[in-house]
Image (tube, rainbow, N blue to C red; front, side):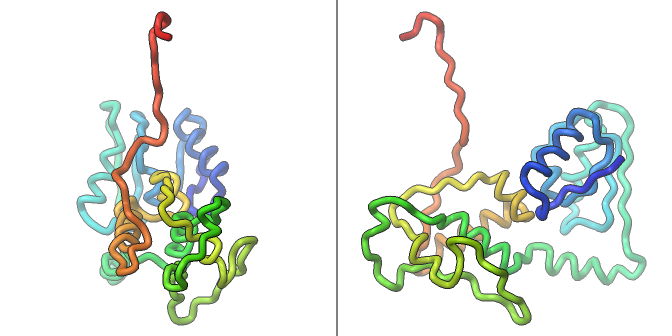
Length: 212
């Protein structure tokens, strides 16, 4: 039995597929590269690539997840005879489309509900949405969306945590791609954000029984 794993699935569906695979109930998963990030399963017996990853280093990283338990494992790679699509793959491997950038901006600048948000900001500090490419259609906005959404999203001096793993899976991009987009926001002449050092989102504190 095989199941798919991709960004269009809900978080609960992706979690169900991953848990089923990790506990051995599901033997095969057809997935994007986001599935293998942080995968710690020793008895993976095979990995099949439909096409070559963007670099040889990425390919080695992905296939090394097989055979960790010492049992022989098999890795297969399928290539187009002409090879033309490989050039296209390398050229556009790191390309991020309009909707991915838009979703990231909405994650970084969520609607605020604090008193600081009521302070009037200069017009130039509103956050513009990324511009669509030629031929792209605007998707229908839900509550809080639309052209005026920046006026209710910019809340300056506030810290905002962006879970790396969850965001990578939700946007279906690499961790390096996500970090690059965040750097663009920081390096912009209007300095939309100031990036802090990565930190653990969950901390476990243990104390002895005699401690107060």
